[in-house]
Structure formats: structure tokens, C-alpha cells
Length: 116
Image (tube, rainbow, N blue to C red; front, side, top):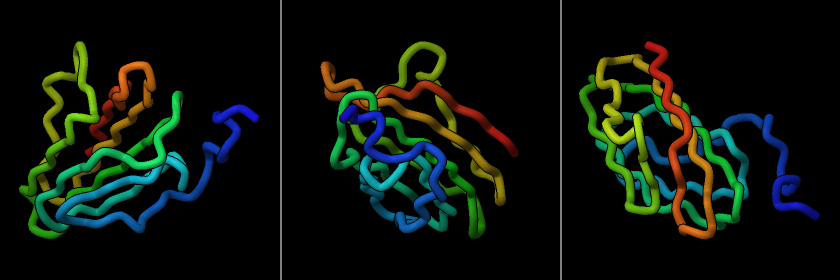
């Protein structure tokens, strides 16, 4: 069985991730991750990575806003995405997509969308 069939792409967002502190996503619990940020957030290296795995984060700035986001070295931002700056205003929403490339042991950002 192909790793791409390990779980469906269109699953309800996994909203069990921390809203502040360190987030360690699990690549096997679905693609979609939804976080309402209530404090500074550090994205740790995802666990259970496999070649071609994707993670899509929908990040909503909650609380008073103005919180920071930092990304572990396991995440790669190349080309136009190297200057990725998160929204910091209250209720703003960013969607950030990554794909895991096992040959480089890195989650590469392939999409960034600022909705609000």
C-alpha cells in the first residue's frame, strides 16, 4: 500500500494541538491541523514523517494577538517563502502547507496564504 493512501486528505482538522508553547504534529493523524494561537508558539519537528506526507496548518491568531511563531529546523522555507511573516492581528488566519521530502529529512513549505 502506498504511503499516500495511509489516511484520507479530507479529514476534519486535528485541533488537539497546543495553542501556545511547543506543537509537535503527528503526520499520521491527518493532513489538516487547526490551531487558535493564544500565546507564543514553537513548531517542533513532526513525528511519524514519511516521504510525501503533507501537513496543512490553519493558524488563527487568538487572544490579544501579537504572538510569535517559530519553526524547527525540520521545516524548510525556500524561494519566495523564505521571508514568511505571520499575521499578528487578532482573528487573522494564515494557512501554511508543507510536504516531507525524506531524501533531505525536511518538511518544505509549498504554500502560504494569508486570509485575514
